[in-house]
Image (tube, rainbow, N blue to C red; front, side, top):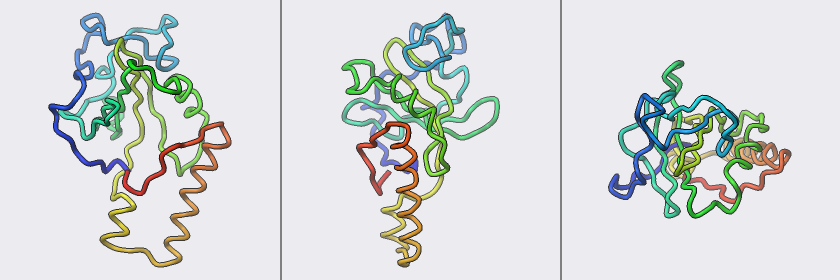
Length: 175
């Protein structure tokens, strides 16, 4: 779920590029092919494709910034996740994106787009509306059959990731 505890905007990374002109921002680089691929694709800012929320809804201790967004052409709600290029991620973001593109399972969040900027690798993904599982368990509760159904959905998503070589390190009822 995209229900994430909000943190102060003052802890945010430098703002994601918001300029309409790619030439006006050094943070706007190739979009096609994923983070790190500069193979002659038209330079583009994330904000050329998405209307970004004004403030991050989460900034992790590692500096990963998450913002709500809406795809301009389709109106599709999304989440934009900006991962700092420094220090380098344990697994290159391009590798993660390449694997993510291979996952086809309704129990996994869909990847919409990926961008590379001079400071961040950016992925744009499906926004899942609703409450976190921990909130459902606390506020509503689940009957045994509902719990089994949720467990089957979670394990189906994890199995789909494993089939393409992803070992997800953080499965949580809170996000």
